[in-house]
Image 1 (tube, rainbow, N blue to C red):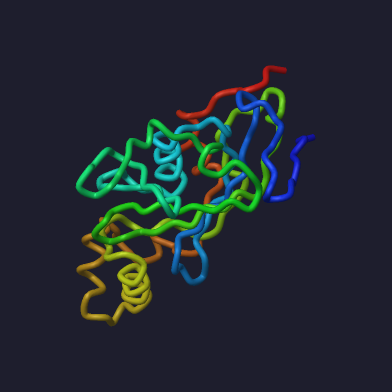
Image 2: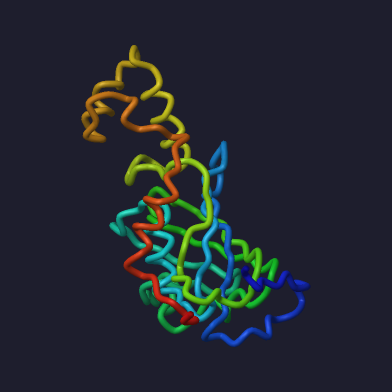
Length: 206
């Protein structure tokens, strides 16, 4: 059984960083119904690696620029003109050390996919369990380059209407033979954890 502590947001976890796990809920901002993933991630994960995990969990393909935002700082691929510091220099437990902490992640500065990240719990890793892992989630991740959250909503409407003048064009763009090959309500937990598996490690051996 997991020894997870739900602490007061004003306090830091006393769990050792090397065996500590953050439970975070990552929600695609503006999505209605909400598109989200609940992940358990080693607390000492640097933000460069956390970027890889969010990409895997939502099915993004890492084509575009990205940044984490803490309110005061931005972390991603270093860019002085944009005020972005190196994501490899900062860890999850440093920017969000306790329950209730929030920060943002933006992927693709054109489509502007904004994600809200909330720390729901901080606790001890379970013996023999590989992290990161996805606990649950809701709905499919949007396709790349579909115009942001509003463009995605429009895409879903077009796919649901065989009589729409853009229906066939959008199917061809997505590489689909029929609209039922893409279900916006679908979420596959096993598929998500398979995508995360290449990043996973056991923190506490049995």
